[in-house]
Image (cartoon, rainbow, N blue to C red; front, side, top):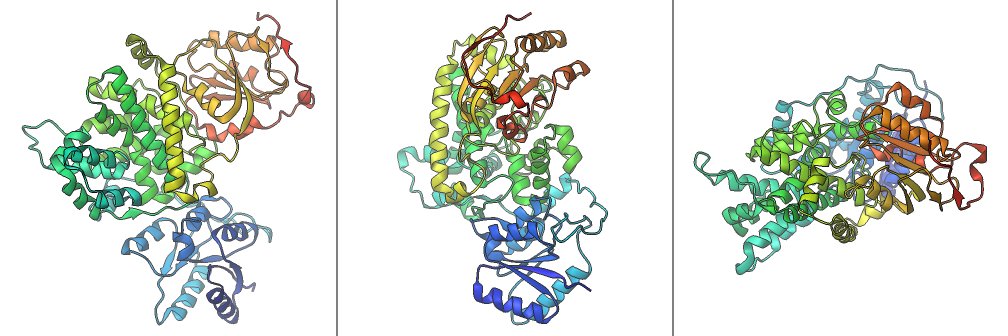
Length: 585
């Protein structure tokens, strides 16, 4: 019988060598890795029966090796046994939720327990899914594991054991150590709370519990909550929070969570001020809570979050139906359950649920919820477009015409909004590098822009176009086209984006695409055609090996790198020239 292989992932050289010797004496084949990156590399390249992962690697900010193993298709089915000392009792639960089959805590009898656990795992694999084929040969096929569906009861059970949800370590320290000036104590409380969705959730919940439900208006404004709770109340809340440590290798790095949420919050507040929509800080709160469902999934149900992230990377169509098929519920509903559990007003739940809809048509009937949803949707799109990277669950869509009409009504110059938003995003990403030092080691930021040049075609000019902004951030140069008979100045093989997301008429879509094809704009280059909904049979005439049809909304990270690759046509490498384009038909 072939020796079972144990991958010893341990940064301590002496302990790793001793364990390797012990295991080889007991009939195992030992492989060694001293870092998280090496662990992933060996597990992907060789046949490994079980990984014995020292928790210093799992908990370090350098790499969340356990989550990375469970995310990758070649390693997700390898059993992982954690070995080490938990920092908190909660770590034991987190380790199992993240996919480990056992956590062995060091004690006097650890050697015998370790050997027995490894023998049990090897002889009776926990997973029902077949491990990916390795270089040593394919493993025997096994039945795929059943889909585990999330329910309201499961969320309530998991969160019922914690007084407050996990918050960022730096915001907890700010809340505990900041000495609030008496004349602006409430402002400082708001500033701290609006930097962390979990802390804001706790603040609003605490404020709501101090009001009389029968006579008081629900607390939706962080400033009002700060007045009710005060600096001492925030201090008490922060003391009950277990801070989130930085970790790299998750489906979405914590720094990305932070930047995307805080940017959405600040953009929503900016829009609310310019549109004169009641309380701007209420819009800021709604923006900060917009991704609450993903926060909860990432921190408390990591295998389910990883399933969503993997599906997005494979080009799964975003929306409620997709998420419900994968985990039994969509993230907006998860957020609703959490908001209800913490006693927050229904308006926030209306917003987070409506943001998960495929379109903005099916909104809550309340006017306040509708307006707030439109503002947060626009802010969220702007945050995703301006972020210099791609979040795995970041959805790209168009801003509803209803929102653009509101901007025109108040004669608000969108160019000024974009300039201010870019400055805010630059400040946040700079701060992220300070607050999350391992960000540069992760894939959440581009090391270099994925596109050099891109042609962007839209038959009408729109003041608020997050799709155009998205490509402006991800390329060195965007050449805008509104007519097929334009004069091109970009290289001949420059990739192209055709945005038809606002063209509802199928006939009009076909006419535009036919004009582009006749003008020669779709030859010898790669491109994507963004459509306002599902593809029709007639669209297939414009698809090819080098042209993709992409229904909106979409996960752009799934196809952005493909767009930047060279086209397959042999003639794609023609020299760049300034060329007139034939008149459209």
